[in-house]
Amino acid sequence: MKYAIIGSGKIGTALARIFAGKKIEVAIANFRGPATLASLTKELGSSVVPQSLQDAYNAEIIFLAVPFSAHKNVAKEFKQWNGKIVVDVTNALHVAPEELGDLLSSEVVSQAFAGARLVKAFNHLPAAQLGTNPSLGLRQVVFVSSNDVDASATIATVASELGFAPVELGRLDQGGVPLHVVGGRPGGLLFQNLEKLG
Image 1 (tube, rainbow, N blue to C red):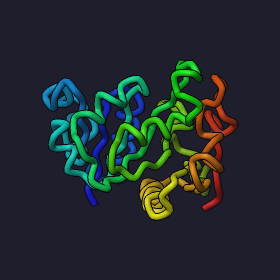
Image 2 (cartoon, rainbow, N blue to C red):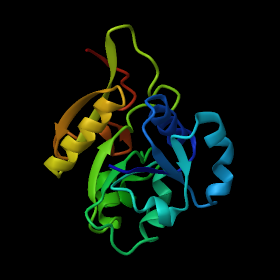
Image 3 (cartoon, rainbow, N blue to C red):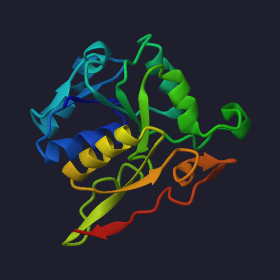
């Protein structure tokens, strides 16, 4: 399985650091080009591979780690996302509800990424907390939500391989609602840093 992170800000870097810690290869890309990511590779090691957006698109699982306002710019880079799993790590924290048209932000993102299988995950914690070591014998919880059952299960497996305890919440418009900003207010699972035995 090939993984790519699109976005090299705080959350993209946090995800790259988690992959590097498990020595799982992951590509990372941004709009400025792979040369701007050389220092990150030097810091995190050879398992984090800077790539162009075009090369990162070849991954089967793509983590969308850009500001919510930039998701359309990423989506329009390619006409078809060909069944790829896109993990929506964005949060629409400063977006007026009317801009979303009464939809969840992940539903808006899903519309932009034609053909993708969208999963909401890894978005509920600030970058500084994501992947921080919990107490001995515990794992940090990552919530997973998708309208695609198989895609949700795949990302839950990836979360486990990265050292997290995945909790699948079901569909976006059901269990996944607390992972979103609804009516301008953060859902109840945003910013909850939970741990699970094992």
